[in-house]
Length: 105
Length: 182
Image 1 (cartoon, rainbow over the protein chains, first blue to last red):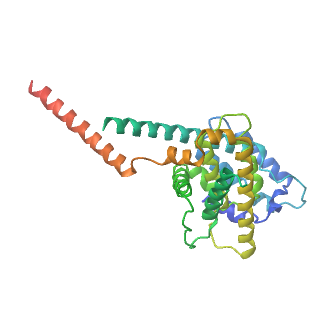
Image 2 (image 1 turned 90 degrees about the vertical axis):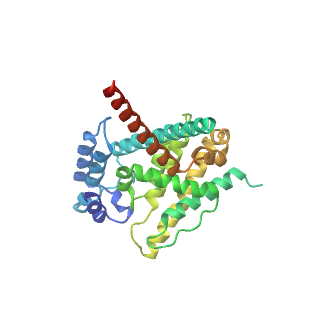
Image 3 (image 1 turned 90 degrees about the horizontal axis):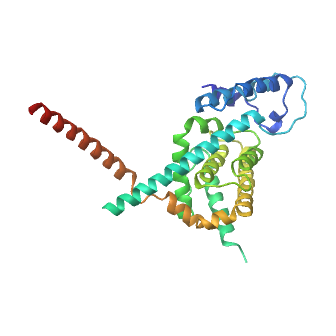
């Protein structure tokens, strides 16, 4: 629910990349909460807090790169790598069991 | 002369991202190759298994190309081991960020299609410049079909699991009764 609200409030143009100071502070606060033992539902809560709700309140617009904040990016990357490696191992295991089974039968 | 691997890779990625970027209610375009059909199926499984992670990126409205560039740089870095799991996951991620939750204006549709083309170009370049030798060693996209194309259907595994479980229960029950009688 938080995600859909967040997405609805998110501005639909790349101008969301211009972050107000209070948005940057919020992102830093969220980034500090992340740890190596992060789990998927917690990442979702973090990501739901991220987008343009705070950005809309900004009065002054400062130029900034269009990159996703580093802390959140690191956790997304960590999750992607973990899921990818897990999927790779799972597929190898399935293929091994299939080969074994076809040898036996 | 066209590079066959590049052509096949581009065709596969274009097929998949076009499939993902279609609007709700639009018919599914038929897959253009065996690996395209398999990629759709495998990516969907991964997205369902890790729904909590992927759901945050559905209907992503930010700079998709920039986000994809960051993810590709981080998940497929130079000189490090690549595996099919990571590659397929990255493709599933790309499919997620171009997917649409609702019907859009023409301008937004064009933007999504443009982003799809740019992401296809990005992934083609990264895969075929930095990881071409790995891809060729794996047998290219034929290797992908071998790895992920299950020789046995899912319902076979389900049936086998149920039979195994029932056998264990029956064996346990027989053992229990036999011990009681002794």
